[in-house]
Length: 138
Image (cartoon, rainbow, N blue to C red; front, side):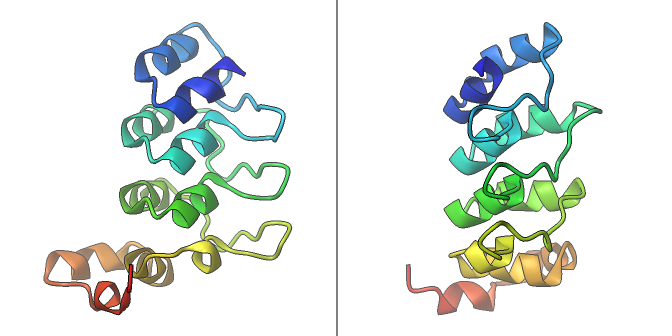
């Protein structure tokens, strides 16, 4: 699906053209992934932001293995994408077919803390260093 490929590759212009031409923001590829899954997995923040402007976007859409865009961003360690998805109502408690939540897939301490504490964590983060990062050995 062209819109999913555009988002996955970070091709903002093509993504925008698809949306302006009326392609469904929730169109799926063979794996059941939407454009938001692709952009979140690859960490293309600008594409994620463009997709979030679409009123019909299903932010918690699960693909064939049950992953949401939040699962995809968390597993790849894309902190800013995780933050913006949570700000726009992504459900951090949804489980995939392997019984994983986005938190259980997260690899970075800051993402785990963010998923645990929710958006309240952002205020704490602005006030100083994140102790979760010091525990991170990556």
